[in-house]
Image (cartoon, rainbow, N blue to C red; front, side):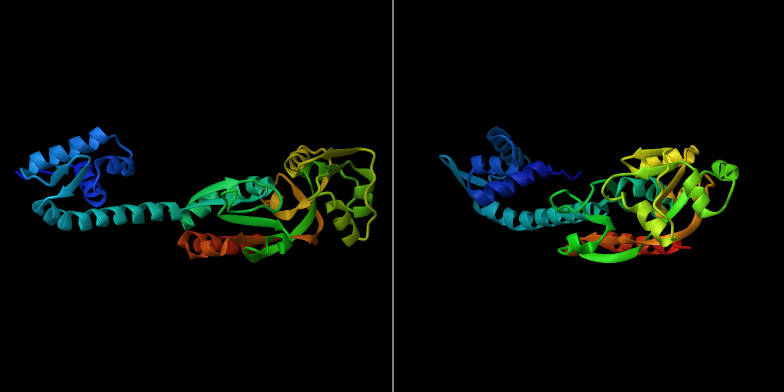
Length: 300
């Protein structure tokens, strides 16, 4: 029966042979000096061969040890390289993707199953950082930018699509509205506002495109986040102007209905952004292709 030499003994042997010191070998392997000494002793016993000359605190290979090292060291290097290649492949399939929370909740999550079918090995991890930031410092591989690319010039950027603003309300609220005239609707019904810096101009842009005055209804609700405003609209609490992709799933499922025409938002667009070196990864290229296809489908 073949005797199998423990890998830990071989790692210790190669480290001691290359460094000429059991203490230094222990430091390289992150183990104790006694563990290395025991591993070498066990290996010599198993092989019934003296592999090292002990000269005080230093050691040197015997003739048999040198011959053994010439055979073992390249084989161990192949094991290390094969392991690193496998680990790198697993790491390359893991992408941290940043997008605003509303897009993640209302557009990304409803499409996760399609993504898993299209790129089954992708390990996607979502972050929700807001505004421009350093991708590498924050550990983000890819960003779906909702804005302008002026602040992302150091990265590879590719436009995914226009941002469209739409006015929405719940189907039940729409049934109770006395008129389909936009001026009457906006003037006589509660308005839902989102006031953070990225959304505060939504009503203004939409109103100007429809040649309407910015609504000033006293019966209004104000939120800081689009997620809250969308839930308020679903609960029939008023009219909301928001970003079309944020409510596409709700419209498709008849939780909300669009009123009036969609308006291209001149202040924001959607971009795929990543450090240029990330384009060398198959996972990044596959994700980019999938996003381009999904954004094209979302326009329909």
